[in-house]
Length: 359
Image (cartoon, rainbow, N blue to C red):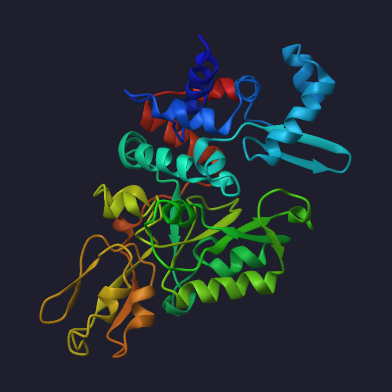
C-alpha cells in the first residue's frame, strides 16, 4: 500500500528509546507524511544511528551512491536526519523524533503540522514519552540562586555548558512557535533556544539556528531568566548540545507536568525552593513566576511536590523569603553519564532493545 513506507519509518522511530508510538487513528503517519516524501521516508528506514558516509551507506544498502549523496544533504537541510561535514567527509545518521526531527522542523512548521503534532503530543505521544524514565531533559537552575556552599557539577551550570562549547547558535522555540500558529501560547521571547557545538564555526553553514558568539549566548540566558523561562538541557552528565528556555504553557516537556500530571516528565534540578515563613509577605510574586504551579499561597507561600528547582521564584521574591536548598541525597535522581547510557536505561524502561539493530 502507498503508506507502507511510513509505517516502516514509524516502527523504526519507535524502536529508538525516545519512542514514537502508534495510534488508533494513524495521526503519527499523517505527521510523517507532512515531513517526509515517500523516498525520504524509505531512505530514513535504511539509516543507522551511527555516522556513515553516503559511500558507506550505498555499499551497505545497494543504493546509488551519487543519488544518495544528493538526498542525504537535502534531508539534512530539511531536519529529517543529522548530517555534518568534517574536513572533506560528510557523515549522516538517523535521529529520534524527539529530540531531533520535531525540533528541526522549526523552519518548516505550518498550521497543519502544528495541529497534528499538538493532537499527537497531548494524547498518545505525551503519555508514552513522559511516563517512561529517565526523562529526556533536566532542569538547570538559575545560577546566581544556587547556594554558594554547593559544589556545582558542570551539567548544573548553564554558563559552564556555554563556556565549554566552541560554537553557538540561537533558534526560535519550536514549542512556542507551534502554539502561536494555533492561536495559543504566550508572549514570551521566541528566539531563545540555544545550540552548543564542540566544533568551531559549526553553525555557520548548518541549517538550524543563527550563529552567535559566546557572549550573545550568555546574554540570551540572562534575558530568558528575566522573562521567567526555565533552563533545560539533556538529562546527562556529559554531551550537552542545547539549552532550551521554556514556559509551562508551551513547552511540551513542562506540559507533561501541567497538563498530563506527570511530575517526572522532566529531571528536576538537584535543588528545591524553600520558604522562610517569617519573611514571607504572601505577595504571590513567586507563585506568578512559577512555570509548573509548584507554589501555593495560604497564609504564606508553600512549596509543593511539583517543584523542579529552577530558582525563578527566588529572583522574583521582593522580601528575599525564598531560596534554593540542595535536595536530600535520596531525592536526587541518578543522571546518566551520556547519551549512550541514557538510551540504555530508557530502552530497559520500555522493555525493548531493538534499537541496537540501528547501531
